[in-house]
Length: 183
Image (cartoon, rainbow, N blue to C red; front, top):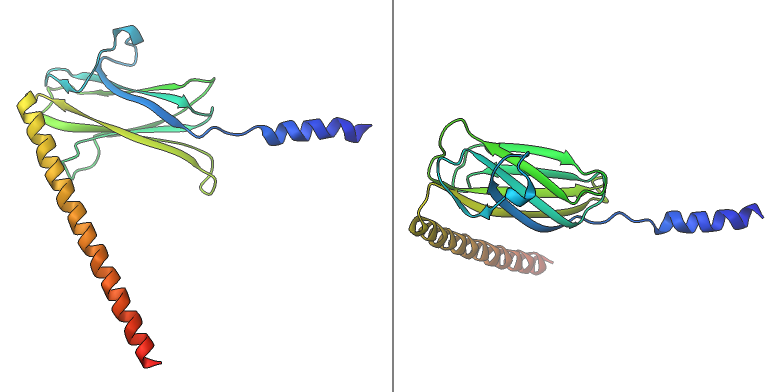
């Protein structure tokens, strides 16, 4: 009789799975962590005088106890990130908020908010990632110019990667031929 009681318990335990984080939305708005959701207006471009910005990440799926990490940085700057922080999800929450504030006006620049979310240990880690560009103190023309320059830079990097890959494949083929001829 005891064995029959344990079988359903084992089946229920085995069926419980952890959800892989799935990012549904990432947005930037003027505001703070205390700003109500109804008062957030998500935009891509902000005045240099907009000193308080808040990043919001909504998940369509995420398990309690997952780590959500936000990194704010300038994608064209080789310096350290402007800020990085992590939170742990709890109580079924599917929204995370992160704030970036400045005591001074922002420099005219492109920025990026990078989000990484994970649950579990190294070998069994379930992950999600995403990012969003935003701009401070830049005109629409400057933003379009940035995107054009970024696209050209990305195309050049891809071309270099393909050439490197082709060279490695050719060298691997040459190396295999030399080894075969020595046999």
